View (spheres, helix red, strand yellow):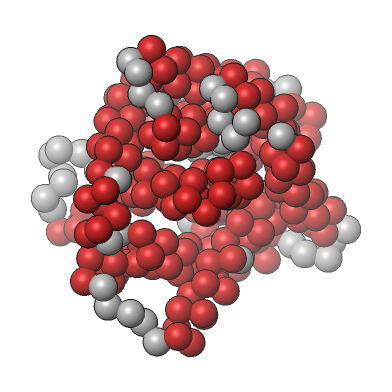
Length: 312
């Protein structure tokens, strides 16, 4: 379990570096926006193409289809339930979207992948990536709309405006990755290497952005926001224990349970900071939830995984 503590502490180091650089006036808010643009338009799309092209294959999906089905069911259950729960956090519709996003979606790519690799090996990481396919689709369609005030609803889902919003760099890169994976088309070696190198910048960039964003706010105010602690409690403890417990009682074990619990136990996603920052939206709420949930995850993640016997 030492690897788990070490991994979460590494994440906090990047946040602290971003915070320190900003406080020392070495970097400024406009630099965070540039990083956000790189995150949304380069690092994240490269990660999507690399992940989907490597894992979205007919052979693997045929063998591991239960991972995708389970993940899709999880997104429906948590998406519907957290949609209503988020309304209790704020009366402001945009803020409700931020809470809903954080309650439904965790920082699986930034934290979960590293943990899966460390405790379950490359096979466990691949399982988690495949499990995350429906999650990624949800994240960069409906989730993306919540963070950019471009709401998708049944009324406007077939409009040209919605189509343009869905065809953002992230969803387009997922489609490219899916096509490459399903068809078995191999990219030239130098292209694959370039995509892999850019994808490795994803987590450090996101964490640095969070650190810079946090420096713009009063830390005392962030730490005194009771709603952030409640959201973190749901994200880190209640959801993994309840949903993981139900799966355990229903006899669900192996890669499905491990992938679900790791995803649910991860802290709030960084997109509530990086994407609003790109569109000049207020990211204070997202920064507070990211800071608090990442701090507490250093303790909660190892405990949750030990309770379910994952990596032991």
